Image (cartoon, rainbow, N blue to C red; front, side, top):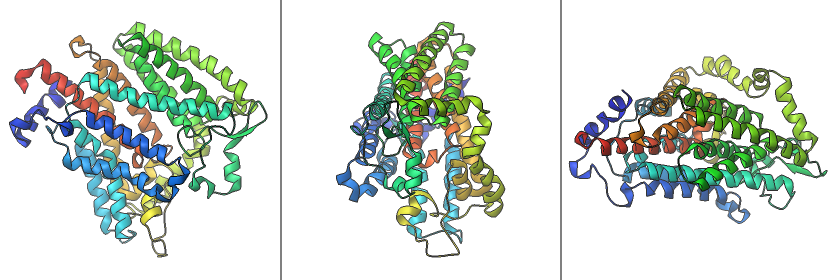
Length: 467
């Protein structure tokens, strides 16, 4: 059984790794409050990028969350639970570390930064799973993520509805792409004003679509929960706000990914026989989808309608192939044949931008638009095996929890359904950008670790003789 395989053996493993007196950690560094504070830090770092006065120290805020994650890996105490993804993540990190000695590696500082980013992103799975997190605390963590993403989606709607009033400074990296590229990120609204695709609480046009995506997905979980009527209403509101912003953002891949995630959640509800909740989810999301589209077209004008018509008039696979699909093809047809064991470290992304030296013509900088290309650069063929396997076992674990009907475990089935859909969405986003080299990837492992800890702690409370 699920809890016997992955959870029941966890306290036994922990007992062998730490003294019995520390099996139940005490103090701040052993409580779930660490996760809450860390999430707030992630939000602060993201918002700091919107403040022009802090532009000279942007690099500090970009790396602060990654550095804090690594620090918590060293200082957090508690039982070492064995999540099934851990061996694959360690193998992936080992492959990346071996590429440190690759002749194509950039500067030692850039190489160390590349390895540090990768480890810091999945580090929460190791340190957050040690914390004493219960179901109530996990619900608070999800609520915190939901509120921030809903706020980002709401700000995105305001940016289109009231041009110029809520607009943050444009990312310098976007500006550096040239006037033509910047103009392509704008559209004309129904009022005739020319605006950027909604940024939300980011500095990138279209960035609000990420908040919109998670507002709908996390809102669906609160809608189906047994929590207060207020939280149910809040979840429904998040779905509505998220869908309007998603339409205005015109990021088609986000819409397709959301559709896949909602279908995944519906599938779990169907398999577990929760028909009432399935119908509730379908009715609310379906109803809001229609109303939100009308609202978005009324505000955004013909540009919004035309953009979404391209998705409906063409085969989705053709749309992807003409956009991000070519990067996936390039990974298998060009990158892997050239770098079967990896390309060396510090040659792409943030590590190269901040710490690289690209004066060596024998080791020029590389470009990774999607996560699969990044995995190929860091570990070659094996890099495309280890990390995806970690994602697949994580996805399967969430599905196993979701399909259980043990009421003694509270609403873990609901959170498992959410995590299954959330994880599937994250896996889908690896085909669009470098998800697991970003703050979003860190949030992914943080949420999965918190859920794993909460489930184990509930199991230990129900079966104290297994401690």
